[in-house]
Image 1 (tube, rainbow, N blue to C red):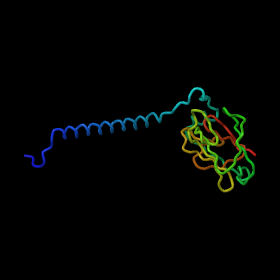
Image 2: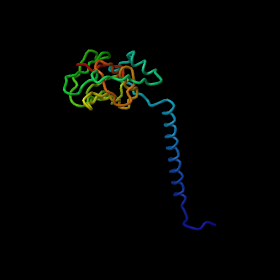
Image 3: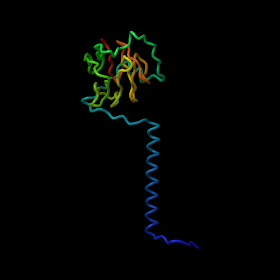
Image 4: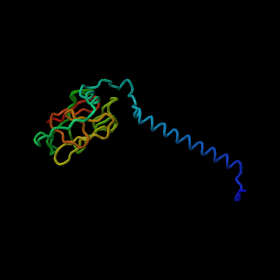
Length: 180
């Protein structure tokens, strides 16, 4: 009948158990992927002491918007220059309203991470949410693939976008502007 090396019962049992474990691991990965596709990734809630559940009107309008709007063209004189002119980031709404952050260096990071230049503690801000950077003599706003997105003048930022002076930027539930 069968020719070859005889296989012990213990070896067959180990192979069957290994196959069943591999099959169940595969099933769990498929269920996790389907759940993520249907319901999205889980959002970790901030502790009650630091969570700020209020969403600014700009942010709530953006979250319900189905299609991003395209920003209007900006003249070079309206852009925030990166040529050494002293500029500041002024928080106009949110928990830190009224505070100012000088725009120094080449990069300003925004997010919940403690190593960010501007730390925003709310449920609508990603750990590494956005970045302001200098390029070509002006400041640019870049969204870092955040969950809730970043808006500039009510338009979603999808690529590095020049920042006009005194234009609202919404990150999470906070709004700020670049000013002289």
